[in-house]
Image (cartoon, rainbow, N blue to C red; front, side, top):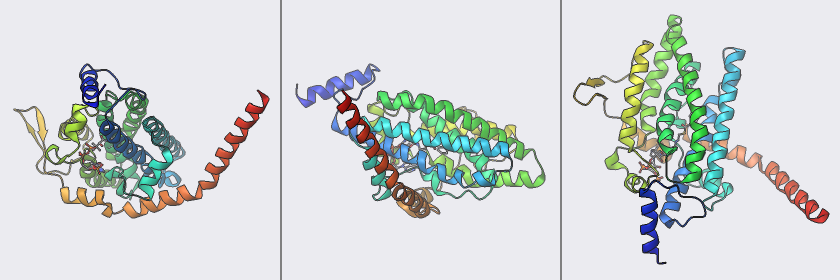
Length: 314
Ligand code: FAQ
């Protein structure tokens, strides 16, 4: 069958809501787009451990330390599921990791901001995990089977993280005057970067149309961002925190919250590698990867010997 006919049938399967599985025929561009998006996603989960890990030793109580440790560990697991799902597309984890440590593969802009106070840990749980869930609930219905299935468990865990972050920020917002100030200050710093997680405006998003045609994305960047704003404004109001946007206003006609323009120069600057923490994050990941080389070598050798032993015994 020629490629054009195959592409037509592929599109028909997508339009019929069928899942695409690793051994199915797929256009080369579909494979490339998925590798790009899934590897970025996996890198983000792993880099995402750094800003939070920074607070494990300084969490204010044993309970909070336990909760944070579990959350950071969950993020490592998410990275592993997504790397494994991406490997079904014919790329190794080593290649993907090296593309971002030594190359220019991206990871989410949000993890290039510093965590200055413990309230930032609360705000990350509420806003960053909250934004991630909005995006990932959609991805759980995406057309590529392994990606969509990996999202089901990830969404459950992210949802737990978000509830726990909201509970913590609510406590701070209703705590002492100093705690209230810390909570508001962290919302002031994390609000706009959280909105940037959804990517550029649809009109500036070169990948969206193709990803939507293939139902990898089911909604556009702007649609998801609006959904996040609508639900988060109400949550902020419920605990007495201000959203730092003078243009935020409920629109009776559309039934949505209108909001101000994002600081797009900052967004493009961060994704080009010039954010506050970009260099530090890459340096830390590079060191961890290089320091861990002997562990990977030992594990590979161990697996090789085990296999040899099994072959001899059989
Ligand atoms: N940061 O054409 P589009 C988490 C790039 S997980 C950096 O609109 P697309 C869990 C984009 O790659 C968070 N780069 O791109 C957690 C493209 O560049 P390229 C991560 C960005 O793919 C919580 C260019 O701009 N989630 O938080 C960003 O259609 C707490 C043009 O953009 C995912 O990765 C950005 N924010 O849409 C962990 C979800 N936005 O590649 C720890 C999966 C755009 O052509 C603690 N990914 N760019 O060179 C997606 O849903 C999509 O890839 C988007 C971007 C929506 C991120």
